[in-house]
Length: 70
Image (cartoon, rainbow, N blue to C red; front, side, top):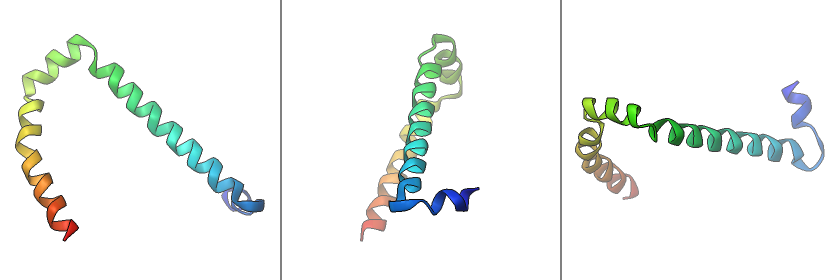
């Protein structure tokens, strides 16, 4: 089935697949935003210290990106 889609004229299948993938990513981001906007979820996540974890990890991520760009 997938090979049949890939053999369409002018690469239409790859454009359609990319559109579906981007639509799925947009729905996941929107869903995560809805979940994280709930006050009960925010209170539950604050108990685990997710914000503190993000602040701790960020310098390491920046250092990794700097080394990778060299």
